[in-house]
Image 1 (cartoon, rainbow over the protein chains, first blue to last red):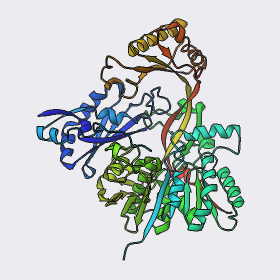
Image 2 (image 1 turned 120 degrees about the vertical axis):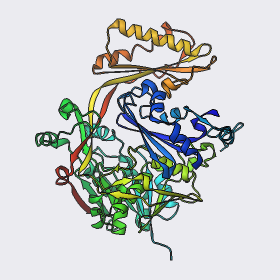
Image 3 (image 1 turned 180 degrees about the vertical axis):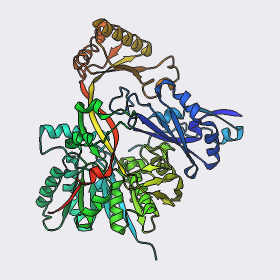
Image 4 (image 1 turned 60 degrees about the horizontal axis):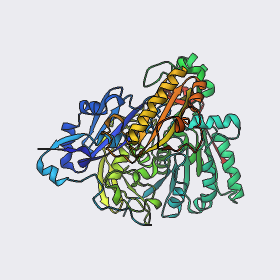
Length: 127
Length: 458
């Protein structure tokens, strides 16, 4: 078994509602979804965000979309217009969650190596 | 025989979005409806401030300018437009629209529909006295605790009044606050003559509206999945729903536009800003997003089917904005060598200084942009040789004087603090009022009696 960052297995988008943020986490492939369900638990997510999330964390499963939805209460330092953070609306909390590491088989680690990251040597297209 | 399709395009994700996107939707291929979302959570309080200064203001002027550009094409091609651009002055917005349409020679060729009644500001005390607590949905606190600081209060109306405006012949409908997806729900319910009590079709329409309401976020913008492979985002095609009578639909975009519509871009948007996916609340329906069947058909086409709905609740969500003090943020750039250490030392110096001066803040927040501003405590330790960081310190207080004074405390660090610092050429940071958001619920019956629909011929 190997530990890999979640960004290798999933992509995500986050947004705000008042002082709560939500993060949708979507498995790159159907076979990776059970790994998310098993390992990306509310407890781990709450611990990962530490004192940036003052309230509770809820998790919802959407197996039809191979996705999990996390609702993080008290995650925005008072909410979109009150928060003093640059990311007052929680837009990059999705990427922050993808820093979490998960344990996968060597086969999965090998197959998904580099997923979610710009390939080496990539350059933006010239206009 | 192919099923009849109604094409609805989502042309704005917020007030400030790509100004040309609606034009690409109108001109780039077939379209029946253009829906435009201009109102974020706090936009209403900004608009109210504008209206306080000028009674004819208070709506999204961008929309009127946009209509001036696209109205002749929309009229010629029978594209109807539904927008929540009315803000706190939908009637003023309708007046401006009529003036623009007449100048464009559309007299007798178009009708403007106006939906009012979302605005609860003038009725707050009456509603409180009648036993509507308007308690904060997140904290449970009663509205009375902030009543004297309320700046705007609006219910999120549903599709019903907009459907009525379309039924009466409007081809441009302007509203104040309505639920974002309701713009598309109204277009679809009108076009297919769907009953608002047909819960599964309402759920399909609400899902369609949800996919459309953030513009290019459904078509490759802000999409994490292999983002570097998404082509031509400078001319990104905004999303189009091709709805069928069955309630099944396809998400796509016009040909020859940039972006990407696939399982990944659409799924990211479906899950965007929702709570419990089995009960996604809208004023028109409670939709169960776990019943969606998603099929990526390739060629920028994603099929969404199977969604189930249940009756809407008997409440509207209300968005209340209230004044909550003052804020300012100042920045300075520190460079190599020891950029992070210098910024940390400057922050410590600044904090000792404001403490000695005796100023009190509800919050002081420090970020090092370039290192930990986005991911806070999840950020790994700074690399040894960071080329530069921007120190950003923000404060918030009920006392405007303290915030004003803080705005003068950052610049002196250029001469009094750690070295290799720059970036204050822009002058003193601007103190701004904090307008906080207070979500609440209200019984629909208390709002519906003030909702009005009016259709005015150009």
